[in-house]
Length: 78
Image (cartoon, rainbow, N blue to C red; front, side, top):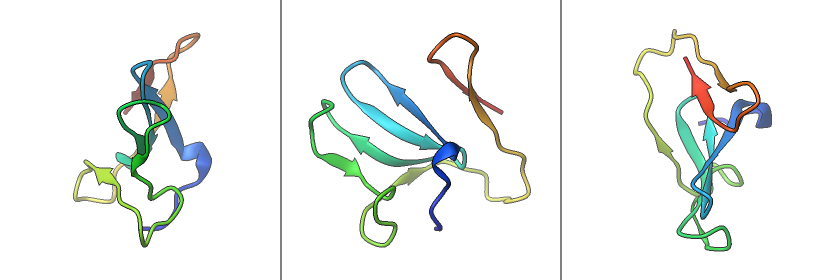
């Protein structure tokens, strides 16, 4: 899996931890259980060594987008 452009990531969080969520449905960076905890996914830094979690369609010919709803920190997609 090739590196994604940084602008293809959104951040999701619950005020205790966070994850970088890619437009391809992949979580490539996530610290768990707190912001200062070690990462459990780190593909954002090293695609050959560190892991990721992905839910995506098998067909690559799909339109992908993600965005933050206006004046919020809610991540949407389609």
